[in-house]
Amino acid sequence: MKYTSFPIPLFAVAALFFVSCHSCHDDHDHGHAEAVEGAAHAHTDGAHDESAGHGDEIVLDSVAEREAGVVTATVTPRSFAEVIEVAGRIEPAAGSEQTLCAPMAGMVRFDAALTEGLAVKAGQSLLSIDAGSLADGNPPAAGQAELEAARQALSRAEKLRADRLITQAELDETRCRYGQARAAAASLGASTRRRSVAASMTGFVKSVLVEAGSYVSMGQPLAVVTQSRRLYLRAEVPLRQAAFLSRVSSATFRPATQAAGAAYDLAALGGRLVAKGTTAEGAVAGYVPVTFEFDNRGDIVPGTFAQVFLKGQMRDNVVAVPLSAVVEDQGLHFVFVTDHPGAYERREVQLGATDGQCVEVTAGLHSGERVAVAGAARLRMAEKAGLVPEGHSH
Image (tube, rainbow, N blue to C red; front, side, top):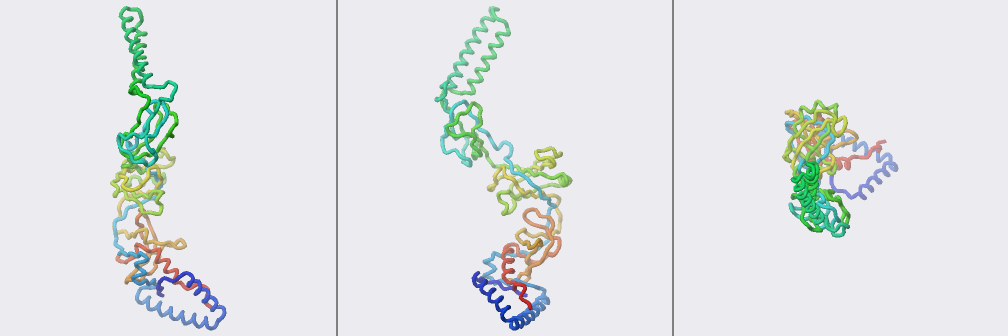
């Protein structure tokens, strides 16, 4: 039976369905005759199509096919990796983040609109610490004064020790206080009431940890700057699948923020395997971690969870199709096969492993057949639109 799809307004479909149902109930004999005639016509078409090897078909003209975005490709055996699906997390690579801290105590002043995601350059001033409104007024100046006092005390102690008027322990204690004062003065810097805090590298502001006008103490974290050039993908493998770890070579992954999009291939992102865990005593109990490193060439956000497809050993002569070629209906999976332009047959298939981009077909499809790899969902809609409603036989 051939189903020809063409645009039909929704109100026309509803009206047609109403009229057909009404005629079925009001004109039983006439409807019965039409049903018999239609059945005979369907049987003739079915016999013709079966002899031609087509079966039930969805027929689209070139315009409808183009508007539906249907793209076909020939199935050819290919190399396909053994795959397991696990959960994972995207994390910033080591050394790609730096935390900016307060060089002294004071009030926070933003030099510009400091927000998360702001692009910054190395040496660019982001905020400043103002000590002018504090009780001590000028911490750097106070530190310099304490250093000078400690220096004079050490000079006197050295002279007193030379005359044997103090013990060696007292001299050592004076030297210790001088060293502490010198370290404190060095951390406070020059004698100024305002100190600028600049980005330590070119990148992006990952997080702002303080608010403008708030008080901070010396050494308190202010903001985090990240480069986001290299990222880590940390996959957690359940213990029951730990034997697969020895065969892991690469992976594809799909961030949780892009659940409907295509998976990223680590090979295309310059990825490499960094480490494999040896115990299940990591951050997640009962799971063994596997870590990859890759370039952030897209809009991948560190800190997000991901669906990870770990790849193992490659297998040859595997029939596989893109995930976009498969449609699901009531728990069954189908592809649309074509052997002449514009005509598509829905065929049930059995699926195997998936790598996040393609899926293995274990039954129902053979090498050399041509399938719709894009627009399969639209073909399914066209098929449903061409079906005759059930319950109209008498």
